[in-house]
Amino acid sequence: MKMRDVRFVRGVAAWSGLPDDGLPEVAFIGRSNVGKSSLINLITGRRALARTSGTPGKTRELNFYRVDDRFYLVDLPGFGYAKVARTERVRWQRLIGRYLTERETLRLVFHLIDSRHPPTALDREVMLLTRESEAPYIVLLTKTDKLSGNGRQKAVAAVQRALQAAGREAPVLLTSAEDGRGRDEVLRWIDDLVA
Image 1 (cartoon, rainbow, N blue to C red):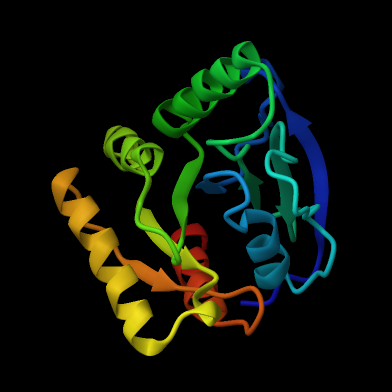
Image 2 (cartoon, one colour):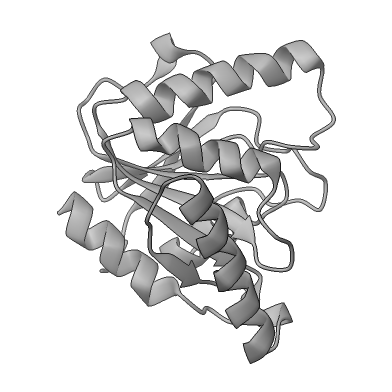
């Protein structure tokens, strides 16, 4: 799958701002600083499409990127330790929860988890929440270039245990925005579920 025309369309902070053109959507969710924007840049082949930062919590809205006028990639705000007011964090959580469980055009959810750490309590909440979504759910382990082969196996096993505890089954893919690992698999999933 090639992405020829990819552009930022809008940042959405409220349900009423969601696009209403009916195009399918592929969402990326994960804790702050897990690498969502870097992975979006990798799969689109653009260096700076999605803004990246070493400071957690830079994505503060649901950012919609239209791909070839066929579908959207949606970069959701990171959850966890972003330095924002509690009221804003609660507003994000409500919007994200509603988006994941009620959005009819949502076709695929990628849940990004940092491979260097076991799934957090918030990651387990996402696993539970996405059970209520009809969209297929896939876990992407990020930053796997920083682990040995044995470390990667342990990371996959930790995620599979967390999925089992949440009563879920889901594919677990290894990715790295640094060395491109997992890019082709992610694109195949998108192509299969959006085409």
